[in-house]
Image 1 (cartoon, rainbow, N blue to C red):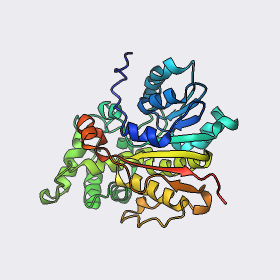
Image 2: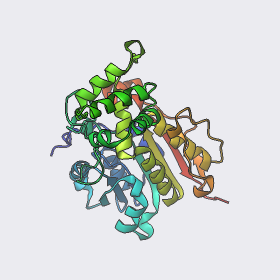
Image 3: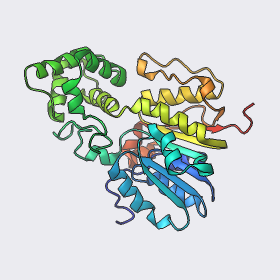
Image 4: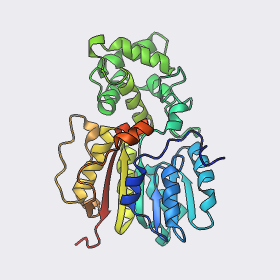
Length: 332
């Protein structure tokens, strides 16, 4: 595998800014909780050499395979521990796989959302092609139900709730009714093309958004529900913050408003600030009590966003927002 051929995984977003804020140094221990194809981790691992430790988590077996090949040349100078798990189980994974002092971190990175590779794979993340509505990030048999299974099993009210809370879709009830009616007629929705068409039929033409496809919010909401992305984020980020050493740093890259609100609120609470209102979606509310978080200092008062130059080179970066915080040395 050549240095530029890593299974179609995207170029790492906001790489320079991420490295500046994480500031990896030789001998340190860092966690990439969302390993993906290993783009960020490769650069982090190079800076941990010699004698450092990189721990990488991902629930996508294909991602782990690509990242393992990408990181292999560094294994003589850096301890590399890769674990197949979702970051919501971060605490359990660290206890089981590493344990001891190595489980305490000098830095942690979360690069959220779906990868370019997953968008291009036949998993139903995109409606550019007509394919089964899978939507799972972890395709291990039995890991979770698919998007098609969710649509076949959930009640109309549950589907509407998912579309409203996770997609902030104004027409959630009408879309849910259309989808369930198809199921009642013995024609369940199982492919991306049909789902996109039914969403388009459900939303009045005058109400279609100008900047995105009318079905984008529906696909986003179903993907978040299938993979429990917001619950995973809250559990995983809290666990990672608790594992930071005094002075340790956390960097989070998010790609839609619900993720960013959770990160913003968690960082603000731990920094002793009053989080701003979470917005009108219940899913945007982050519930972790302040007493359950370590004391943090904000490294980014406002989210860092990509430059126009980076967006031109890597369109996936367009919606990225980076927030960073550091665990205080004296928490009294």
